Image (cartoon, rainbow, N blue to C red):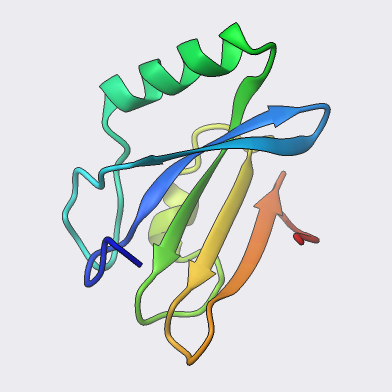
Length: 109
């Protein structure tokens, strides 16, 4: 919510298919409808995750006024379909989160 009114974003560290670390980043786009993770922050997250025996295997971002669903822009920017993509909607009174991997919605908790 700190990124409002823009989309917030970051990377997810994974270990055995589970999220074990979160790396919040700046949104280079400074936009309410798209995000770009700064390359230096990706590098830093990869180095930190690997030093812990993890891997960067996902990304999260918020939709300040939209649903917890992958938008057309989000789908066009998928770089690795096997990653976990989490979208958090901030449109309602409470945040709602949904996830996708390999083009399908996955359960998140």
